[in-house]
Length: 207
Ligand code: 3PG
Image 1 (cartoon, rainbow, N blue to C red):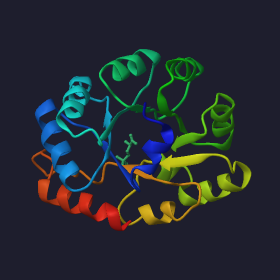
Image 2 (cartoon, protein in one colour):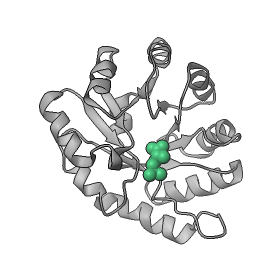
Image 3 (cartoon, rainbow, N blue to C red):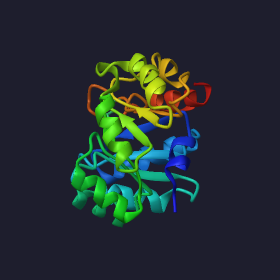
């Protein structure tokens, strides 16, 4: 079973992937894997997302950790896990969602954007949290302050992070990884830019 530590420790960047279909999911996930990516957050923002998780997991080698993002409810958590997602990520946290994922024993990163929310999440047993939306919720300055008062909590900031700002977060002791969609930019025609994706994915290892 995948642990939160494995998810956070897999890479300095977790690509946040909003695929528009299964074919795109397979093509881009293979490309990312070939560029060294080993952790994938496939968001549940398209009707094909669960199918994408299922097929990407089957297509990639076993060392790929394929998870699900935008888990907004217990039902979505169960569906994502049943589709094979090794972990889940949510932009927020409700009592119902927290209780459900704890009962499932699933690696899960709930989202918070304030100290009180982080304290509430820690009370529910979550010690690794998504900080979202990071860039407009205080950015690295917030996380530095959070580290002083909540030293036991690790954060994965996402939302508005770019290749240029990632390092500002990664240099903090409580940020093992950052998430973001900048790895897979789309062109004007709506398709994911393969050349830019390759370049950005390869650049992860130098962050
Ligand atoms: C998320 O779900 O974490 C965010 O949508 C990613 O934010 P970004 O698109 O600004 O990277």
